[in-house]
Structure formats: C-alpha cells, structure tokens
Length: 190
Image (cartoon, rainbow, N blue to C red):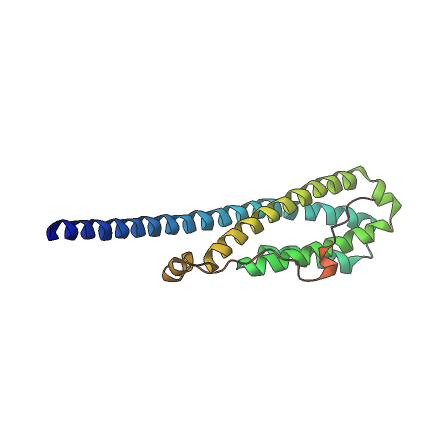
C-alpha cells in the first residue's frame, strides 16, 4: 500500500513536470511566432516605404520644373529620402521616415503656390499614387504596432516574462510619431 502512494506521487510529479515543459515549449514558440510577425509587419512597412521612396524623385523633378527657386525644400526632401535609405536600425529608420513625411508636407505646401503645377497631369498622378501609398503605409504601421503591442505585453507579464528573460527577448519599438506637427497627414489633395 505504501508503494502505491509512492507511484501515485511519482506519477503526479512527472505529470506536473511534463505540463511545465510543454507550457515552456509552447510559450517559447509563441514568442518566436510573435517576433516573426513583427519582422513581417516591418517588412511590409518597408515595401510601402520603398514605393514612396521611388515616387519621390519623380515628384521632386516635377516640382522642380515649376518651382526652380524652391531649391531648399527640394534638397530637404532628397536628403530626408537618403536618410531613410541609409538607416541602420529599426528605431533610426522609423525616425528618418517621420522626417521624410514632414519634408513631403513642405513640398506639397510649396506646390500650393503654383497653380500650373497643381493642374499638371503627371503631378496629379504622382499625387494620387502617393496618397494610396500613404494609406497603405498607415495600415501597415497599425499592423506593426498591434504585433509589437502583443509581443511587449507577453514579454512583460508573468509567467512568460521568465521565458523572455531566459532567451533574451527584448522589448520592440512601437512606430510612434514624435511630435504633434508630424502626426498630421501628408496633404496630397489640392
């Protein structure tokens, strides 16, 4: 009879250990899935940034033909575009992308002063394309932030926090706009 209780105790302890190991594996795999979702979301943002990046030279050239003396604004847009391309970290890329959005607002403000430019079909086509890209980019940012929020929440809550710490999972940056002026949409409607 004493031996029966011993076997029951060993069975219960073994079952608890198996449950803990299975939970541990599932929690670790969930962290990996969430990390991969964040990377996928950031890659989606990159796709739309690349589309916008490719539109900018055409936009600058179109504006240049009508507003040659607005060289400073055109140079700022080009410099901001290059900063995004040369970003080495996620945080730096997100910050430079915000700067580029601000310079695009300046470019469209310049275009307001040139009625012939606003009537140019090439400019209007570029404007519409940029508007579509900006909408897609906003949706991609929302998706990225949702994935980051879920990951960071799991990272900071108990007991998954223990696994995150053991495997050096770190908090991921949210896509945030640093100041109120940059929170405004790039105006592409004239």
